[in-house]
Image 1: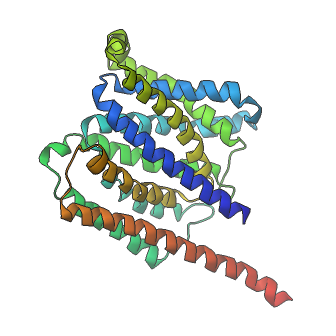
Image 2 (image 1 turned 90 degrees about the horizontal axis):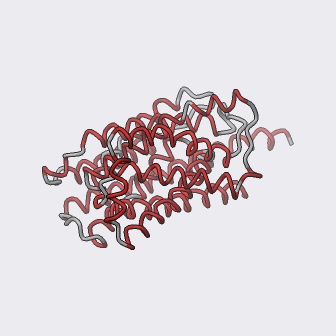
Image 3 (image 1 turned 45 degrees about the vertical axis):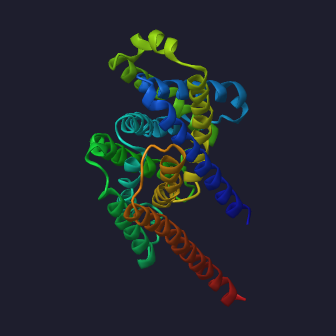
Length: 315
């Protein structure tokens, strides 16, 4: 169906952009002392592009809808800031694997939504498989890799709240706002520039900007530009995907996909070496993500059959 194609297309585009952007941040971020300013750059670039090139597609139904969506903005900004700080102090792989338990939180809370999330034993088993794989991977991390553990945990908590709120306000089956996806993306970036900019000022990064800029080479500038472009794409495609799938499915999808980033970090960037135990753990995480997708597919197919059964009996 068209809805299924849209669902698949939105998820695949989001996964591609997330993978590329994480690599760009990992390559560029550690060399730049002004880490939070990267978030300001990305938000201002996205807000400018949407205002100029996508203005006809911006729709806000009412002030009430705008205020309802503004509840999301603090968590959107918090997720952006803590992800930047986490990647500045911890390896990308630690950020990835420690977020594998977050779908359990969203799974529990989404059971109380207006349209509750249907669950099955296969879904729970796949999530626990991902957690086991993450624990296997983390068990052999060197002690220095745990330096940014606080930022990673904070980022995971904020990400859970952000996904739950976005699902509630975007899905047509829940309590949606009357705002277009382009409008939502613009609000996130436009309103989010203020708190992120204040954080950059508080860290003294704005005062250091001239000296930092003078040290950038052409590749650094290219990576920053790429981060802004891909960040804009992620901002929109994450809204698109979250309107189609549950918060739990969104987090499972992102967590499993990021195994690609672990592989790039180990093989492409050569920034770490993986043991066979870690490789098995990461593989279990990906396998859990695949099994979760199949479990969700079975539940949705069963729901469709139950919906069609009364119509068939009526005839």
